[in-house]
Image (cartoon, rainbow, N blue to C red; front, top):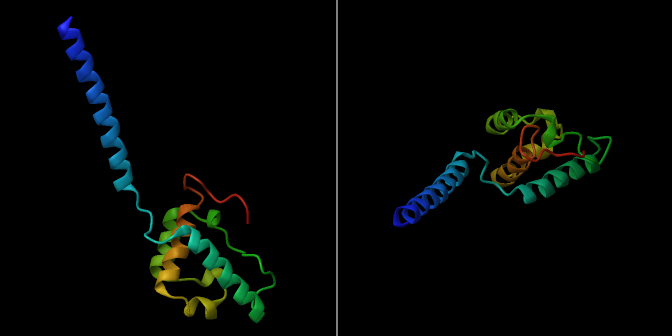
Length: 121
């Protein structure tokens, strides 16, 4: 009887430990950028609207969506600071590093291969 209780405790503790370690491993394995994705969405739309007001775009709605590319592609674009796909070169040239990091977090978090890809444009 005592052996069965001890065995149950050992099994329960080992299950809890493996779930805890698995969760920690997944959290540390994540490469998500340090920026604020909610602020990045707002800032991106603000950049597009400024570009539209200047007359460089035909529409005030963004032509590029996070789901247009995979996370690795967005990483390459933002690390290389090649924002030509977005258009609006003048606005992108004047954007701060913090704002660019926030926009990167937004695009990375909702990329085509992310757990929650962007569904609307």
